[in-house]
Length: 451
Image (cartoon, rainbow, N blue to C red; front, side, top):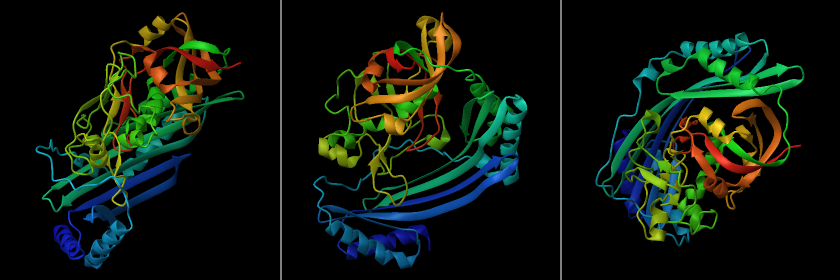
């Protein structure tokens, strides 16, 4: 059945069941992934999914239902289940169906280039990336993970208030992890790339970077415990920043699950730090004209020169707070409920080169990797204690690799102790609504537990 005709039938049936305002969210996605191990295909998958969900207001409660059966047989079931779901709810916070924004910055975000890449090319690319890693240096003992993948998604939102929006996007990515060995010492190095153009991926360049990262860490040793100036590499900053992004959710703030509760309009970071949420970045796969409630997305300086200016809101949290939604409603799939997520969230780039930051630090620790974020980070208090690797810096130069250390502190204190922001900005892998990105940060001091 035609998608538009099916939606109209669902709305009509919903009216018969006594539903008032209604919304249909239709999602469709396709994905391809291949993993190579020692020159052979270790894992290969091609998948697709499609479905839609119905939200409907019944006696001031929002009922939900969803299905992957996109034909007339699902019409009655969707309307009936949405009503029954609403009847058992007793939510005090009201949800509403959105009538639409005055203006949307709609843009084509689908790359036809990816559709023209054959599966053979994708597989050969992954194999070459692995072989280039093995060829690069005799110390590369193993390439435990080498993969290429791509995917596309399509979203349509239509409601009984006249709103009808759609978007589609696609993305390719690759990831390689290598193990370098020297005697009994083994270190890993990883690299990833994302693009909407397959032909920008250079297998030799990607493999070389991963190998260099691993080899540089060989011969590492611990350092004496103490408080050190720390240059946190952009990859480590991205990992910590991403893990803490939920503290900006108004839902978590209202539930008392965020260390930012009550801090709106106050200084939460160094004046050198600004956090940006930009749905319009020049990456087709992450461009967002509207959120998953149909609200027009907008650029936001969430932390502006150290001052917290806003939380991330959807319609429900905005109504609770008596403010305007920020356009950050998010659904991870057609079957999920509405939550909150950033679009493309990042720390604004600085103007200082990393080499210059090392000389400014003179003596201290450069952290390139952190581990244990799931267990070692408390996003309610902001306290963290994480395993780390990197380099000991003396007189502005890397003296030796550092391992078997634990870095501890508090996230807000870390942000307030940022002395210099690097000019080496990078985006991480996309996920949870968009990209996260950051430059390297020079921090006045952090507690390091070592020997």
